[in-house]
Amino acid sequence: MNDSPMFERINALATEEEELWERAAHAEGLDGSQRDRLETIKVELDQCYDLLHQREARRSAGLDPDGAAIRPAEIVERYQQ
Image (cartoon, rainbow, N blue to C red; front, side, top):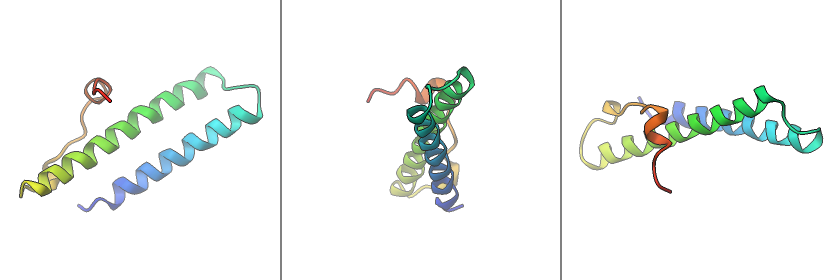
């Protein structure tokens, strides 16, 4: 697998996130389900970027990038920035 599907997923999530923030700016904020969706998008984006980094690291080490796997939210959300 190449990384194109992952970039497409990232772009779709980023677009949805932008649309939600746009609605929030032009309306009276976000309701609970929209805030929950924003949080879900944040986690999914973190997981996608983590997977891309894993794949690149495996390539750099001469390993098969397809051996990388999506890590649980509990792991990727604890990374230090």
